[in-house]
Amino acid sequence: MSNNFLDAVSNPTWKTLTNEMKVVVIQNILRHFVDPILEVMKITPVSYQFGGIKTDTFEIVIDGVEYVFIPGQKKCILGWDSGLSGLSGLDCSEERQELRYELKRYCNQQLISSLLMEEGFLDQDFSHIHLTTEYIDEKINASTSPLREVDIPALLVEKKPTFVGLKFIGHYNVISGQLSIAANQTEEIIQNIQELLLPEGQGNHFLREYPTVGRKSPLFIQQNQLNSDLFDCYIDDAVSFVELKRDIERHGFGLLTEDEWEYCCGASCRRLFKWGTQLKRQLFHKNISPLWKENMFGLMIANAEFGPEIIDDEHYTKGGWLEETHKAPIINLLPLSSYYRGEGIEDKEKELTPGYYCVRRVIRIDSNG
Image (cartoon, rainbow, N blue to C red; front, side, top):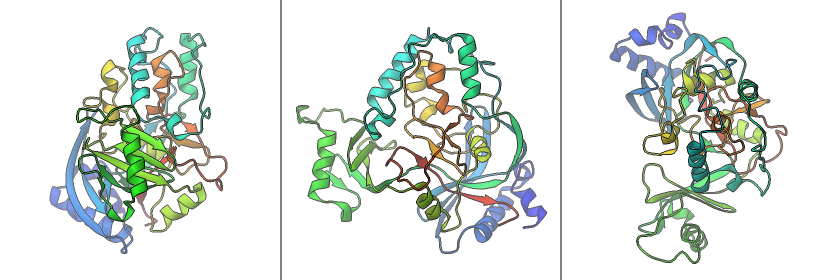
C-alpha cells in the first residue's frame, strides 16, 4: 500500500479527513484487506466517548460479526512502572471494605472463573498477607507490562470477544421458552436450560428472578446484556490453541499483539485503568459502571465477565476474571488494567477448558496487506 494510504488510516491524518473521505478510505480497506469470500453487510459511522477521549470511526459488520476501525497511532507509550502513583491511598488499602463487599456480591451473582473450571483449580486466597504500601506497589508493577514506546498500525478489531471452546446454539427466550436457532432445539436442551434458570425448590411463579448465569456441562447460559428476557446459550466445543489460531487465520484474520491490545484497551493513556484511577463503589453497578461499557474505540475490552483474552504471544494473556483473593480491592481489580499480564498457555496442543478464555479477531492494515 502507498504511504499516502497508510497516512490516511492513521492519526493525525485520519482526524483531518472529511466524512466523505473517511468513507472512501474505509471502502478501500474492505476492498484490499478483507477476504472477498466474506460478506460485508453494513458500514456505519459512529462516535465514541469514554474516559475523556472521543473517537470518530466506523463499525463494519462482516459475516454477521461487528468490527470497529481503529486508526493507527505512532509513538504510543504503553506499559506501567509507576506502582501506586496517581492512585488514591484509600483505594489501595484494606479499609475499602464497602468495595470489597461489592466485589463479593458481584462474584456471587455474576459469571466468574470458578463456574467454568474444575473445582479447586483457582483456589487462591492471599487474604492472610499483610498488605503494606511497598507490597501493593511491587504487586502492581509485577503484574503489568514494562514501559515502552511503540507504533500501532490501523486495525479492524472484533467489537466483542467470544468464549473459546463454546459453540453458540441460540438465544433462549424466557417468555416463549424457545431457542432462536430452531435446529438446536431439543427437548433435552430446553429442559436443561429451564433447570438452570429455575433450580428445584425455588418455586414456579411469575415474579421470580432468574440467575444471570448458569453452567451444567456441556451447557452454559448467560443473560443477554441488552435484553434480560434472553439468555445466550452455548455447548462445549473444546479446541486447542493451535486449532483456534488456525481457524482464525483461515480467512485472513489474526490475533492482537500485546502492544495492539493495550492500545485498543486504554488508547495509550497514562492511567492504570481505561476509565481512570479512581475505584468507586458504583464500579459494580451494571447500569453506570465502565466495566460493562464500550470504551473510547467502541470495544468491549477488559470488561467484567470475560476471562483471559488470548493474544498473539506465547507467554501472556490480557485481561482476566475478577476474583477476591486479596483484602485490597486494587489488587483484585488488576485484571481490568490496560497493562495487566495474565499467564500464557503452556501447552498449545492441549484442549483449552471451554469458556475459560476468550478471543477476538483482527485485520491489520499495514504495508504487508
